[in-house]
Every structure is written in structure tokens, then in C-alpha cells.
Length: 525
Image: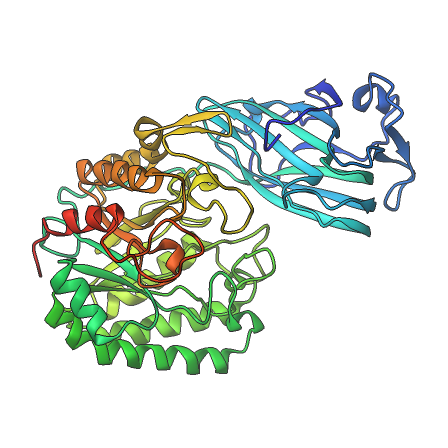
């Protein structure tokens, strides 16, 4: 499970109801059941547990009913089916189910409770993609999520049930289909020269807060000796913002104001020796409750997105303080693409073509979908277009880097064992390997646009993590931006390790000294 837990029941069936096709195409069904099969309980309840039964389903006669009588909510009742991974290695799967619940107790973490989850065992560790469910009672709802299956997968199992919670849950119409197949790149003309968009040995800087003063820019550029910033165009928060309302007039008004602020500060950045990457952190349409970008659901948002990037290209054409344009921060397409809408690869390519036609002299930075994650870079096909730099964000293992941000986790150390895997510099290399492979295969420059760990990790854990990552970035000749300079104090290297103290440390932290050490090596533009 997500944590090492005591399981009171685990039933297993192998390769059941799986499509007989070998490697599938988009839309192919790799697993499906409505629990209508004869002797279905022999599969889902071979031990004849009284906690698992067949009940009335969603618009059908049958569903799988799982009951956890433990009122303390400290045990698990689950059924598990092992899937045939040879049919979908390297693919992205869409997992769907109808789910109903009654009096499910509040679990200790958002990922506990009702379980509709995959367990993906791979060469180096285990992943647990799932759809988090509410506690309490609710009628039949469609649960959906995407699961990326790595090429090094060893086994994959579907889990249904209750984890660390009491109550009743029903499952019906389970369906797993191929959402994406591995990106195929044929006859790509690998460039002889790697394009960086600048003539410096390295860009070393940070993403910045949205309201830095002139003094902040001067401090970062002259005192810290950073040589670039990633300027996030963020509308009052991330991932959710006022853009979620879908009001394009309000969005246009907001973005127009933010660009005026960039105009005002570009001379200051030039004085400070800071190249500027313009990053559209909040896209038109914002995000839905699942944090999927609504730009992939409505064409009007995509049209607005392209319109603004054409405007930005015209606005900053010839401006040598601008390094480039990061088209969208951490794009997420979600489980489906809307009518007449492009997916991220096609939208990014179309936008890059429009930008390049107006301004061929600035770098265009492309992040992979979903979430700009280092592992998602396998979903990117290199563009046959000049001026492209590829970017990824590094927050792995997320349980360590974000401890205490969205959950109550604490005292998770690095290096150390996290979710059953030992994490150290070698493990970080393994996580970054897909990015290095992409760079070597296509001779494309890499920019790590975000990496960080929360400041209150125990001891010197955050320092150790950041040091190991930067060592690797430097070895691979990647440009990088720390997340973040004078934004939220949780990521601040100027603040100490006490979560409850929100003022800067009276003396430089080891994390601040680490960044300054690397910034001291910078050549200025």
C-alpha cells in the first residue's frame, strides 16, 4: 500500500478479464469487468471472507461490495488482481470505475480510505497511482485517473477496497484502457550543435516570487551573483487561481498588468545581470478540481493562449535581457481532451511555431506533460523547430520534498529509506536518467526549471538533497533554477528549519551558502 500497513485480507487473481491483444493502441481495453461473470467471487474472494460479497450494481445486477467492520479504522480489506504488464509497458492507462460508499470513516491521510489504485512494482521502487476518494457517504460516482506504466515495470496489480478506514464501498464497471502509447520518433534530424539560447557557460538562478522589489533583484543579481530568473506569471496562487472561473476578460486584464510589471523591472534585471525567462504559470482557463488544465477542454482557452504568446513574442522581440519563453508551467491534460482541442505536444508545437515566426532569437522552453516531471519527458517528442530548450522539474521523492506541505508527514530524512526505497545521490541519478537519455539521444539542451525541498526536513536533509541534485546538474551541463527566491518561506533558503518561524535566519543557512557557492561561479550576461 502507500505505507507499510497491516493488511487483514488480501485476495489475488492473475490475468483475469484482460484483453487478448498484445501491445495495444490508444483506446484498447486492457482490463474490464462488471462483476457479472459466473463464479466471480472465486476471483475476488477466494478465501470466502464475509467482508467481500456481490451486491446490486450501478445500473446492473452486480457490483463488488467490500465492508470493513473495524470501527477503529486501523486495518485494510482489499481485493487485488494482477494485470499482464506485457500488454502495456511504457503506456499511459486510463483507469475508470463507478464507486459508491456508505459511512466510510475519516482516514489518516488523503490517499487512505476508499482504494481504487494500481500498485506498480518496477526495478527501482514502487508507485501507487490512484484516485483519492472522500470519506462519509456518497452515491454512485465515476472515478478516473491516469497511470503511467514505466518500461522497467515488473508487475502491476489493481486494488479495490478500504484502507485504514471502516465502512462500506461498492465498485462496478471497472475499465482500464490505453490513453497514450510510447512516443515514437523516426527520422528526427539530430542537430550537430546543441541550442541553448545564450552564450554563457551555465545559467544558475531561481524562480522568483511575484512581487520582488527593485532591491530584491539587485540583491539576487549583484550580491548573490545569480545570472538568471524564472519569472512566474502566477495569478494569486498555484495550482488554483481566479483563472479557474474561465473569465477570459478578467484573465486578459490580469496578464496585461503582469507584463507591464515585467516591462518596469527589465531595466533593473539588466542592471543586476539577470537574464529573464518568462514563465506562464497560470494558463487561460486555470485548472479544475483535479488540477487538470482547462485549456485542454475548451478551444477558446487554447486560442487565447496562442494569442498571448504571439503578443509576448512581439513585445520582447530584440530584448536581450529576456532569455526565453516557458510556454506553460507543469501542463496536465487530464483524462480526456475536449472537442477541437489539441493535446499538450500539439499545442506546444503550434504555439512554438507562431512564436518562432515572430521572434526567432529567443529560446522557447517546453515542459513535458504531466506536471513537467522528470519522468514525463518520455512523453515529449522533440520538435523539428529551431530555438527549443527542454525543461523538467525535480521534486522526487515527493514525500520527502513536500513533507508537511499538503499532509502531516514529518521527520523524513535524506539520504534515507522513503517508502521502502533507499534514497541517495545514486537514486536521484536514476530518477533523472530519462532526462539525460533525452538529451543524449536528440542533442537537446536541458533546463531544470524547478527543484527544491521543504526547509523543515530534519537535520541537514534539505541541504544534502539540494547539494546532490546540483552536483548532478553541473555534471550534466544543465542550466537550473532553484524554487524559489523570496516567494513562500517554506522553500526559502534564507529561513531556518523551524516551520513556525517565518522571519529570515539571522545568519546565512547552509542552504543559502550552497546556492551562493554555485552562483559565485556564474559568468554574467
